[in-house]
Image 1: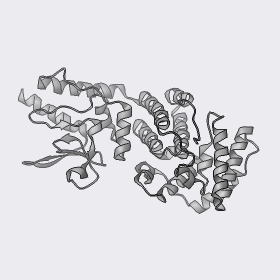
Image 2: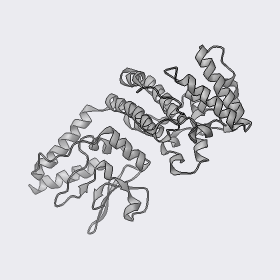
Image 3: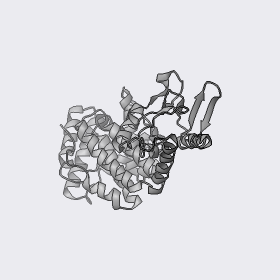
Length: 337
């Protein structure tokens, strides 16, 4: 049984495209929490990571109210208690302020009792969340599940379900991350992709993309292969790679992929891998949390966003990013002509 099975989030997409930055942040908060409540943790993380990369804003903007901050804290705590890599704490969450869960649980009990100012369906949803919270706290899992599905029934009727108040229930959060209200995986992916595409369109810097295009075109011109620039990687492909690798790719590397998905080798430069080929450095015998960018595996991207270049003769060089690597390659090409 699914929690929410509406169409693509047209209203949310419109807000991302045309609303204020504050409205965008509030929309991403609401949708990411809804996805997490619906058991789509990977897609929730994907949306948050893409928002952070696209906007450059701090994740504390996704926890601007007591309830949203509490919701993230309860969901993250519940994830850590479950086995499997899909439940591990995401790296983006390091930017959230830690909370005292016991104190937050007591405060949230007050929120669950406040219903008078809500519209009728909001009151029904708040009542279902309160019932689920009480039952889960008492260890009555069957009653908690029944209340959760009442909450889901109301969620299908309204455009903006109050996922934050539900997720902030400490004893309910484990049921949510465990998949009690899980949606179809393909639907969750497409739902997220619509929001991700809107973020990319809203925050894409046209001048920056143009600079990248000029850089790649000049490299290929000097190589004598002006028509051999690979097509760009899709937003969905980049997001899938981030989800697979468990980390956000730096802005300059995403910008590179937005111009060309990898780059063929020449006599002095390795082949840059396409986004689907990126892999952890550990798979090549290199220790540490790096990502292999080339074949042969001489270029490695690190969490600092630096790129190291290993040469059998000259040792290791460190570049501030992939653009620096390609600019150095361009200088060598210019010097050889």
